[in-house]
Image 1 (cartoon, rainbow, N blue to C red):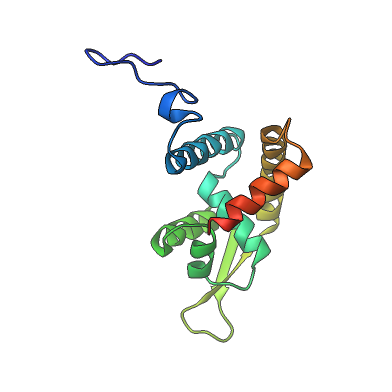
Image 2: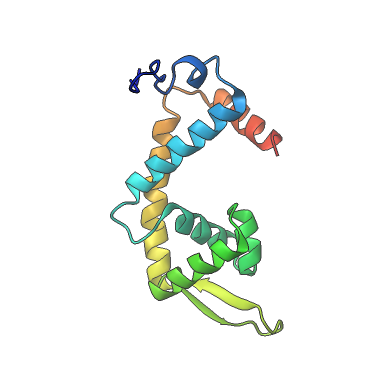
Length: 152
């Protein structure tokens, strides 16, 4: 328990309403935050933040889509994605060029360095996810994945 002055102790993660008896929405948010912190930790020595990693993953998977499309796929606002794309460009991980057909739309693609950094990041994230799933059977993992997708 975490002690606050003059108040009852706060529960640690996994205790009280932060544990098995917690509200489902809160537990989902708690898990998402814990995952994000772990991702940031494993990416710490790479020139990449967790949102930038998400943007690069979506860009690699869906290369012909706009920055606004990538924002939707990465659960970010178009304004946030604009900043991310600008920073990725400044760091040499992507290039932007005018789209051949659409006037304001830009064609965004990973550079060789972008592919290299993304590969290193993916290796770390895959190892992290493998660790998260240790002790979970393939069948249980499939159930969790179907349940998470079913929430959409």
